[in-house]
Image (cartoon, rainbow, N blue to C red; front, side, top):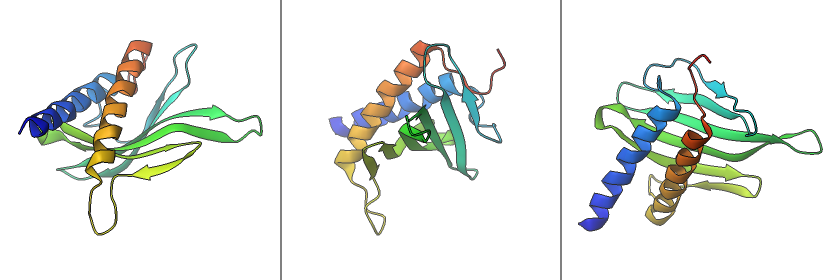
Length: 137
């Protein structure tokens, strides 16, 4: 029972932190970008939208010496506006790709817990750095 309570709390915290970074998240039509001096740009893409669910991608990109743009990290996040709930779906960086979905709709709960914790901490850093998407300076 305590694990379920923790799970709800982190999902709610992720949702509200996302709103700090993307205040118009629930109505924004297209993705956007945040630039903060001294930090990597933050990108937002809208991947899927329905009345019940929104799937977004948040990513930092850096320029590799080869000239390629490398996502580090790039995360897909499911947002459930009516529930004020959000959860990590995927994580990608220069070392690899991980998805919490493991065939036939099975969820890797341990990986999802880890990615949710990472996402929550990353959002804390983004907020502290002053990243905001969708707000004119």
